[in-house]
Image (cartoon, rainbow, N blue to C red; front, side, top):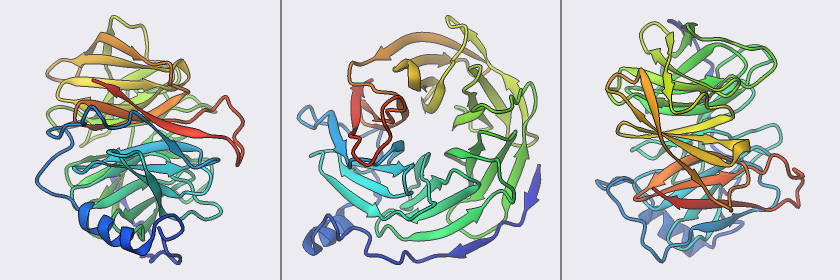
Length: 324
């Protein structure tokens, strides 16, 4: 494991972040209610009357979704890096953080302090204030082209990012300034040129390792936080997790979103996360290439990336919820 000096800089967002779609009074109300609190997304309950499908802006090109302790979903745009926030109780939402040419927002995770960690695609990661939409810090994780910072998870004192085109994970300090940790992947890890390798990422139940899915050919790995040594997780009841994208874990239950297959594979992990046994599969007719998932109460919320549909400014997009 090596530490690199990342170029970080505070960056106040240059535009009013939500006024285009929300009035001033609504902004004040949201600022009061969206803050973190003692409740958690897993202890909360999604009420039966809450919508299970809600729209995103046309042409938004969503891929990542994050939910914290309050009933708000944050979704990132591949089109311009914008962040959209939806009230899960009503399905209504608006732009929280405006995009800009050249920005990408894919994987997202919301911390308990209200900071949103954003995988920025081509070599970058950002930290966004979920209350104001302002970009707090930008980290340039790689100095060369040919990288894709795809997804992120929060574990220990760092936010860990995957690079789909390089065998390395990056650890960004949580809630403070500091150096970025580069963790090369070794051991059983196989890096295949020209395809999406490392994609979704979560911590193991004991918090000592990371679980990373390699989308092609579809394998799960347990990665040591200390050394980067990757051990392939043995699958039982499934030959692979091809098209594995976002990962979400509840206790020893691992949810693997398999985008182009339009399904979620649900695995039981053993105590050391060395074996994953397929328990069931979740499918839904509303799935249209779901990529990542976030939990609130007894539901998983997923964004439909619609990769096989025209990716134009007029293409419609939705997020959907399924019971777990």
